[in-house]
Amino acid sequence: MLRSCAARLRTLGAPPARRPGLVWRLFSSEKVIHKDYGLPNPSWSKDLRLLFDQFMKKCEDGSWKRLPSYRQNPQIFKDFQTRFVDPRFAKEEQMSKAQQFTRSFEEGLGFEYVMFYNKAEKRMVCLFQSGLHLQGVPGYVHGGAIATIIDVTTGTCAIAEGIAMTANLNIDYKKPIPLCSVVVINCQITKTEGRKLFVSCAVQSVDEKTLHTEATALFIKLDPDKRLT
Ligand SMILES: CCCCC/C=C\C/C=C\CCCCCCCC(=O)SCCNC(=O)CCNC(=O)[C@H](O)C(C)(C)COP(=O)(O)OP(=O)(O)OC[C@H]1O[C@@H](n2cnc3c(N)ncnc32)[C@H](O)[C@@H]1OP(=O)(O)O
Image (cartoon, rainbow, N blue to C red; front, side, top):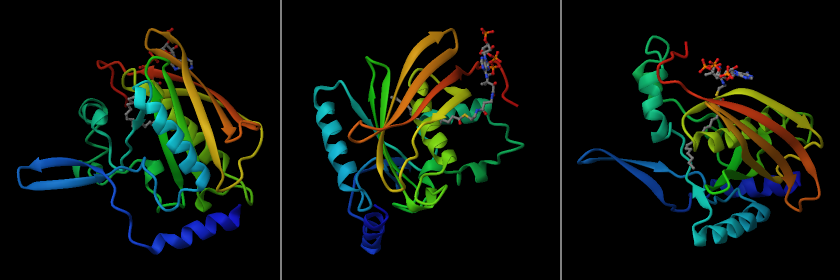
């Protein structure tokens, strides 16, 4: 498994394939191309590509939607920044350089993933391939990296309902995740109580035979009249 990961990484010197990105126009003549990281790249294994294709098929009837994914703060957070980020701690110039943690690694070395959302079922599926720089004990993914991708998947599921932050995250690590393997992270909103969103999550192997991790999370929708700090 490790060897096949290394072999894939050797191909990364090749020029990146052209892939669609989001174009944000700042001024009429100025364009910034934002690369969509939720699309296949040369580091993706056969498993990840096969699952990606299966889920893209599920998108054809509109029940599932692939979520694009960018390094910079997504547009949905622009309002968050204005309302909740204290300019004393985060200067505008710094904020323009801020990156989503999970997208800040070199291609193939960190978190390679794509998420699919089913609005009717309030369900999010993340297809996740861990890179060599996410190692914890030798040959396995670090527990903090697993917590991170669970937080991001459950968080994105919650944020689909409105801007929210993690208040609580409980994780049961049942079986270690081999480094460079692909796992399927399945989560769903199970209950909503006022501003509280309860999300359950399971991390399974591609063949669904191994349950690696289970988690529950509580997200709180932010009150626009309350400061965070
Ligand atoms: C398909 C479309 C998708 C669109 C998605 C698009 C883009 C997504 C792109 C990127 C997604 C990135 C996802 C990132 C996810 C990562 C999330 C994080 O990591 S957040 C960082 C970690 N969290 C924090 O730092 C939060 C710190 N805590 C707080 O700031 C506050 O506690 C709070 C969570 C904001 C809540 O504070 P608030 O004052 O608003 O609430 P209250 O305290 O009044 O509580 C309300 C209610 O909740 C109960 N509560 C609060 N905390 C807990 C807890 N820990 N456990 C249990 N219950 C809790 C509290 O008792 C109140 O209950 P009640 O009303 O019944 O009294």
